[in-house]
Image (cartoon, rainbow, N blue to C red):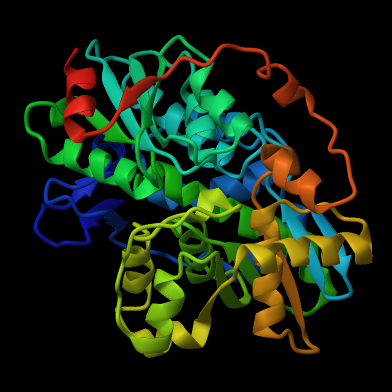
Length: 427
């Protein structure tokens, strides 16, 4: 499988190079040259396959022969090592829980898969690689955990000071070893801009790769979720509508990729908080990124979503085709809290703020009688403990994965500018 830059000013490259380099020399995101639909027999008989077998079938064409089949299966076994249950919260709505991994967030899958691939590609290389990642919340913890102790890989995580939850901050600042954290005086977009600037800097770029969802090895494994949900729900014999809480838009982009592979998905809803760049684009046809605003669903506080260009590519930059298959709505913090209360009062289900935004997207879309809605519950409620317990009459039990980090000491370096990041990387 070859990959090309979406800016079309770089040569095509291999899966390995796309993973190791993160982005193309022209600073464009990599995109697969071909997307071959899976067999109808596989889709129709998906219940007969294990999650490991499904993941292998889904990802193998994008890896090609660059990782031996048995090694790829081993990587998948290490990646898909926990459950992805669907929980019904309404007559025609279910939550797809993606928080049963080590850091209790959906990004555990992509982070672990990328770490395993990078370790394989780097196995005979004595040079160390620095993985540079910006986080608005959950990415940092998932990448830190996924890459912890990985041979030949150092990880530097940039996060906005005061704009991630206490637990999220603990997950990315307390592991030590090959994991380093930079606490940035700014918002997520400032962190992301610093990362992008580093990739333009010829003094340091040779040793860098990205672990944000711009990296194909972080982005593509997210297709697995949609296949797992279809396996669990296709016997309802209703058309599936997925509502995805969206920040950098990598997760919903992976869902559209799953649809291109033949998965019968009726419609997608990109549900956002007040960072409404994409909802506005669908209304007026003008893509106008702007500085992000802080909300209680902080993992979606993104004003210029990197992966939206991939979604546009999947629809051949045809906004009318996009509008037919894809809706996007934004919601306030007050609406999010109201949704958390409504879900809990009607079903007893405790949703985190991101899942509640996904639920609101389905309600705004308006499910038809023959449709069944799935919203992605992207993080365990404990990751947003203060918001959840302030909003709902519940006391959230602290899971074992979280208890282990609560009393660890935070270690982070302050940064206010790109020069601070560059000095840190060079020293």
